[in-house]
Length: 90
Image (cartoon, rainbow, N blue to C red):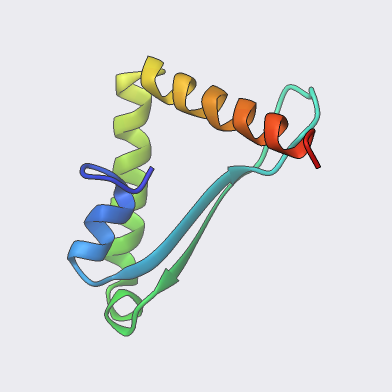
């Protein structure tokens, strides 16, 4: 999510980052996974890396407190459906 209210939007507004990628790197059905966050930081972001880290963990905390959001599930499902539909037409 890159829109208003997103972590990337905040980081861009402070000119700390240009890209953000987050993923659950585990693709199996085990009782644990590794969550990764990768960012392209600007020089200002590198100079303020402690503030960037605080923002990442504050955003994760916010997501945990809010719980699962229906619109996120719907968006992920729609994108997956479209990818499957267009890949099957190749």
